[in-house]
Image (cartoon, rainbow, N blue to C red; front, side, top):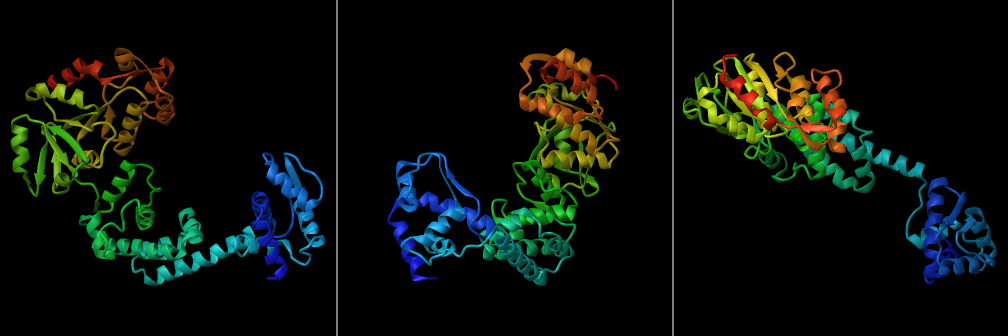
Length: 422
C-alpha cells in the first residue's frame, strides 16, 4: 500500500463529514470490484456537503450525489495523486476489499473444507448423508462467513450426537444426557446453540421431514428420534383408558380408571407405557380443559374414555393418541369452531385419517355454538388450510359468518354422546 493512500486515509479520518461518503464508496467497490455506480446521500448533512465541496471543488446540497468514477478521477488530480480508491478505502477501514463474488467464493471454499473435515470425523450414515447435501443450507453459509471456527466445532458436536443415536436405536435418551456424552457439555445441543440448531437439521434429515417451525413440531421431532427433551411439562389428561406397562395394566393407572378419576400423564409417564386401550374400542378427545373437567363430572356414566389435549396437542397428547391408534381405536375429536380449532382438528385427522373423525364440528354445530366474538385475522388465515378435508364445509361456514364457535356451548350434546349408548 502506498504512502499516499495511507496519508489520504489519515486525512479523511480527521474529517467526520467523509465517513458516510466513504462507506457508500466501499459498498460500490465491493459490489462492482471497481469504481462504478453512483453515491447518493438523500439526507446529507451540511458537514457532508462541505466535505464533498472541499474534495470536488464545487458546491453540493441534499441529495448529495456523484459518480464513483468521478471520485477516483478527482483523487488522482489532488494532493494524494497516485493513491487508488481501493487503497484509500482499505487503509481507511482497515480491511482487504473483496467483491461480493470473491466473498462468496471464499465462503464456498471455507464451507467445503469444514464439511469435508466433519465428514472425515463422522461415523453414521445420517451424518455423512446430510454433510454431503448441506452446502447450500443458509445457516451453514451464514456461519461460515461469520465464524468458521465455531461452525467447525458445532458441526462436529451435532454429528457426534446423531452418530450416538444411530449406534443405539430404539431406546429413549434425554437431550442433556446425549449432549454430555458426546461433547462433555450437557447444554451443547440445546435449541438456542449453533450445535443444537444443526442437530435439528440432522434430525429432520434423518426423519425425512422439514425443519420444525414451532415448539410443538420441534418436541415431536425430538421424540420421534428417541430423544426426551421436556418430559415433565408436556402433559395430556384422560379418564377411563386402560394403560399398559408390559403385558399388564399399570396398577396406578388402573386405580384411577376404576375410580373414574382424571389422570394427567406427562411424557415421562407415557414413555414407560407399552400400550393404551379403550374398553369400548372408542375414545373421545376434546381440546378445551374446562369442557373436559365439566364433562368428567359425569365420568362414572361414560361408556368410553375421554382425553383432553389442552389446545394444540403436546408431544404427550400425540403419543397417547398414537398408542390408541395402534390398537385400532375409533377416535372422535371435538374442538372450538374457529381457525385454530379447525386447524388442530385437520392436523389430527391427517395424522390418523382412517381412525379419527370430527365430533360435533359440522356447519350445523357452528350454528349452535356461534358466539359474538369476531374471527381475528390470524384465526381467519388458518381456515384455507382445511380445504379438501372433512372440515372444509365447516371452515367455509365459519369464514362466511365471521364469528367463532366455542365448545362450551355444545356441552349438552357432548355429554349426551358420552353417556348414552353409542
